[in-house]
Length: 491
Image (cartoon, rainbow, N blue to C red; front, side, top):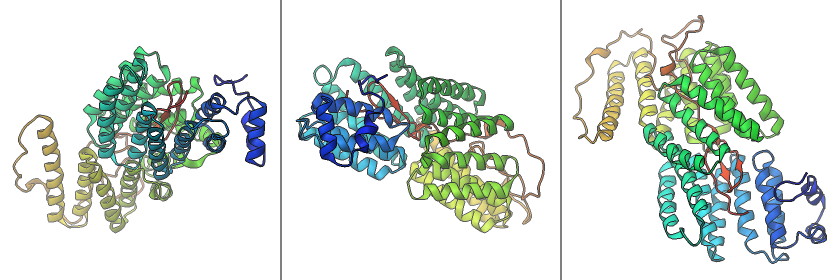
């Protein structure tokens, strides 16, 4: 059966198999598709493919752009460019995603299509979030929300305006989450949830459920987080959004791991791995590698954990994903400590703190700093350990003071209770740990500990869908590793 766009199954394959653009254009003309309406339908089909076949989506968009002149459809060019941006984003190529999104925005403005240009800014936020540029993404959010006031009543329908407001707030929530501003994240998600509920958008409600579950996990509310992720996975499974379902299953696995349900955790990861393999696209493999590493670390299989963390880090190093890489480095540091590779652990944890500091994520930053302090104490650097713990405490106190509208605290006296002998083991870092189990001492092999649920925050989220990072049009969700919203401009 044809999709909602009226494109018969197999048509895109037939078109893309033709060797030249001239033959493709002739085939489109013969089928009555070489006009503005026909290209819109093809681009609708390309949008639907982004979640499960981004390569075909990109090739279809390129075809539409190349024949747009002959179809007298200038608006197809920026729309195709925006879809191509989405395909690059799905593959983790975020700089190219941003470049093409900005180009589409400018081309829409040149055509006088201001509403479509406004929509592309939602996608721009997605790319910026994936690169850890949260402040820029929040600036875009403020600009778009202001532009929506100007567009209301003429360029955008009330329904479109409400939907864009929800998408913007979903992305704002992701920014706040990655910056460690968890209650602000929940507030932003609540705004989106209300709109999606009013509009009857079940799939988007599933995305918000996944997003909320990730924040609840950070706040130590593991049972609630698990229920939220399971609800999201069910929604995505029923909707056929495979990549989104993979991300939710990964979140389920992490939450089970946090709750020390090891068999359930490994089962969820394996199911996610099978689904991801069926997509034939390894772009999100690093997520499952990190999941697997987390599980190995929790089970005290340190060599296996370290190998998986190293492989995930190698994938992440070249594509951005600052939040995910920081969390991978944090886990790697824990595995290195457990393996008594203390010098390398210091360098890895220092890199993780730099990434969390750049994001302004005080909860994660201060937690890694406490782990650094414990490591310094174990190495005999007692003074440096106290100073590092002191700085971590001040960061937390400053954040609490800001949240309560108080003056920043005065510097505290050195922590007198932190003395350790040269042989003292590093202690577990603070409550906000990613789903990893740092050893309480430099270990020999021992039976797995049952970690406290409140001591193990979450994996990245959803996608995008956990990256979290998503692209979207007014009728369809398309998964991205980042759980981010993206509004498509066509249709």
